[in-house]
Image (cartoon, rainbow, N blue to C red; front, side, top):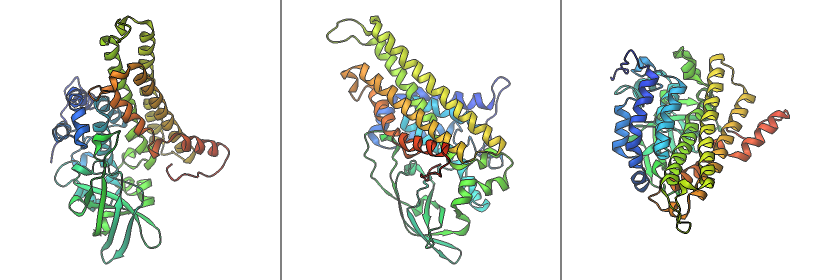
Length: 392
């Protein structure tokens, strides 16, 4: 089992892990187009992230992990996402889902972490599978879409219903899962978020957890003193994904700055860097990126405070979801303006900014951060009405 990172006198664990992510970012950026073309994460980059010991960021020290903070995760994921949003998305989930794996019984955790101090574990919560109780466990069948990380997984966690419509999350070794290669998307193309298929797979009782226990982290709270490890599910997931948005927008702003520095307009025959209008556009791009980072940092602080106080109620979760949707919408509008101002030549596939444009617009439609439903939920909550959306 790998040991935790050894830090020096001048580097904290946070600094060490964030520094490793930033050191890898230029290499990830150079491979971003190739990652998009292959439609799955780059194996060399994945191994680099593993060798940098980033995957076990949240894993308890008991299993050989770092048990690091939410803010370490935020900065690591922002650094990777600024280089390639597809890689950032997969890294965010691989890192974060090791924390969610702690919501299973201890016997399952022993399997997850028996060979190394982390798993590569895609998790989907939509209960699309069918499950039947049998002696010693369950027989489970069905398909589950949007399985980000499935292409390199060693375990897969999928949700389903039994014949009473009770919902459970089941853990499958990857050998029990088939992959339906359907990931042909204009944005986030390099995630390989294909469909997982299981056919009459036996799941022992210790690899199944009720939806309520999975959402509340009850079993993790019984095993670990660290309250982060049993954080409310949706609040934690929002923290998993939001640095991909802010990191992506920072990458877009950097790409736009490069365009302003180097491009000469075809008809104007003058460098963009000498044009006052370009100065305004670049200033707007930079402040938009900075504000996205600040908003994500504030979101994390709110969640962290709620976790420490063990008090993230329904109103707080609705507000966090609305703030996350606002961040996603802010990033979408900001990258659209950058892409427009960059000019037609920067829609060539060799230009990074068109990739950020497609990736952020795709992520802005994600169900976790969908703008209209999130605003509606917040308005309903303020008026004392019950939530009308399952994802809070």
